[in-house]
Structures are given as structure tokens and as C-alpha cells.
Length: 155
Image (cartoon, rainbow, N blue to C red; front, side):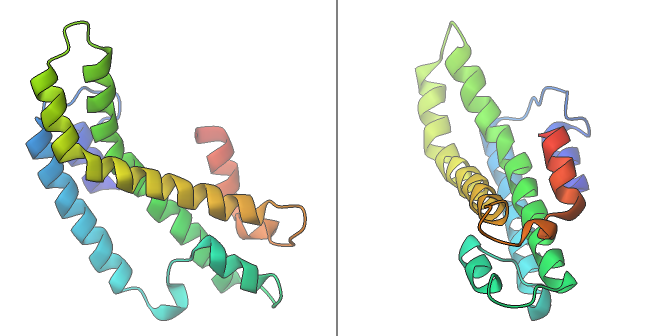
């Protein structure tokens, strides 16, 4: 998280980034590579989960390891959204500008669309996982732990 905040937001979530889209894209590529390496090096017992994994868990005894995997997965996706948010902000700033530079918008679309797709994928993953867990027909609510509290008050 430190690398994302430091390199993409100048160490402060409230500051404007003066980086151009190529600098942001290069930094995001490095961050994505580090996230993939981190995920690949996780012990199998702590591998990230998908919403489809939770369906099988409903029928078995859910342990703290399951809870750790869910929280780790949600934090992973939250970090990806935070990282790729920088490209979304560039899109929104450019679209909101009264003097939109269509050449710059075209460039941003070419370079930034993969970042937008990754952000959307992580957002959809969070929604699917949390949606399945809070479903009243499952007994998995305890898997969210304090993360659910943090999500409610910080998002």
C-alpha cells in the first residue's frame, strides 16, 4: 500500500498528481507485477478466493484460515482499485474539463483502458464476494470480520 500511495499519489491521497499517463501506466505495470509475484508466492493455504469458492464453503466447516483468505482477497482487490483509481481520476478530470483535449483523451483511452478494466474486475470481485457472504441464506457473515466494519465506514 505504501508504494501505491507514495508513487501514484505523492504520499498523500489528497494531492494532485502531476504525472503524465505514461508515467502512471509504467508505475501501475510495476505494481501489477509485484502484486502478481506476491500472489504467486502465497502459500496455497492462503491463496486468494473467488466468489465461486465460497459456494463450496457453505457446506463445510469454515475455519479462521478461510476468514484470513477472504480478508486477504478483499484487501488485495481494494489495493488494486486504489492503484488504478489514478487512471480513473485522469479520465474524469479530462472529461469534466471545459477545454477537453480530444487528442489527450484518445491517448488516455489507448493507454488507460487496461487499467480501467482491472479496476472494474477488482470492484466486481469485491461485490461478488461480499454479496455472497452477506446473503441471508449462507452462514458466512463472520468471514468479513473487522474488514466489514472498515468497508462500511471508509468506503
